[in-house]
Structure formats: structure tokens, C-alpha cells
Length: 255
Image (cartoon, rainbow, N blue to C red; front, side, top):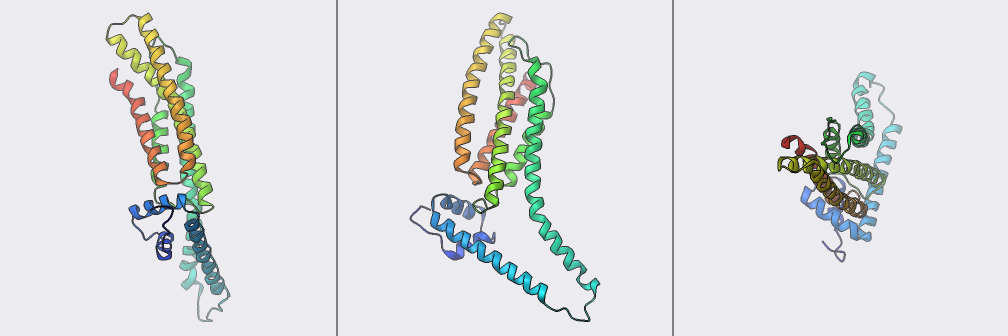
């Protein structure tokens, strides 16, 4: 789709009711990023949908119940309504909690390993916190694929999750630098380099990795800012975290 093409109303309604395929939704998401007219019409359909829902609920609330209706007959309906009302809050709080947990685990892993940082010896302190952080952040990214991102408050939630995921990957990037240090030391030692030579070459390897890390952090922030909530942003997070997890685990296979 391009900016000169406008999505038909029936397709927008199907998008709103989640009756399209993943490929169709992704195509529409890409078009909505560049077409303000379609975003406005989608917002109008969303408002109409919410207004109709409120009117129906109001009509149900004002309807006089039959004198023969007993509480046992309507209790399960009341419970179902409460469960549906609580579901959106749970659906949003779960990924936010998981992303916060992932960020906290990454920070704990970094805090435990930094005191042992040296350019002459591999780390002696290893924990499962960074790997657990990767799994938490990857879960959040995968969970967001079928979410609508361009309507408030969904956009705000998507922006918050993107910020937390970006922060988590940035912390994991520092842990990756430690892993690069370990990989370089292990490989150079196995090749017979002296401690002085291994230390010097390790510094060069970490500096090169650090420059690439800085470029990825800055470029990643700009990339995700322009694609908040878009499937391509969540997929990029997944690939980034998967590569970071691989780098973190690689020293264990070399030891």
C-alpha cells in the first residue's frame, strides 16, 4: 500500500474487529504509518464502536428485569462482564511487568559482573540473570505482534514497552562487551598469546565492539521511535535479543 491509496471502510472495520490475517494486518499497519486520512477514519470507527457499546450497556442497565428473574440466573453473566472488564488491564500489565523484570535482571547481571572486569582474565562471576532477562524481553516482543498500536491508549503503552525494551537491550549490550572480552581472551590464550599480547588485542576487540554497540544503540533508538508498535519494530527487538543471548552464551561453549 502507498500513501495515495486509502483503505476501504469495510477493511478498516475488519481490522478493528481483528478478523484479518496477520499478513493483511501488517500491510495495513504499514499504510497507517504514512496515511493520516486512514488513521483518522480508523479513529472514527473506533469512537463509533465504543459509543455503540456504551449505548448498549446503558440500555441494558436501564432495562427493567422481569420479576421472575432470580439472582442465580444472572450471576454468571455479571461475573463474565467483570472478567471482560478486567482483561484489558491484565493484558497490558503483564508485558509491562515482564519488561520491567527483564530490565531489572539485566541490571543485576551487569552489577554482579562489572567488579570482575579485566583485560587480562576472563570473568569468574557468571549468573543466569542476563539469560533470564533475554527471555523476559523476548516474550514481551512476541506478545505484541497482534496488538493495534495507533489508537490511544494503545500507542502510549506500545511506546512505554518500546522504551523498556530498548533500555533492556542497551544494558544487555554492556554485558555483550564483557562477553566479547571473554571470547577474545579465550581464543587468544588458546592460540598461545602471552598475557600482555592477549590483553592488548582484547582491548582493541572491546573498543571495536563498543563503537558498534554505540552505533546500534543510537540507530536502534531512532528506528524504534519511528515505528512504535509496528510489527517490524517488535521483530527487530526479537532478533536483537536473540543475537545478544547467543553472544552471552558463546563464552560458555569456548571454555
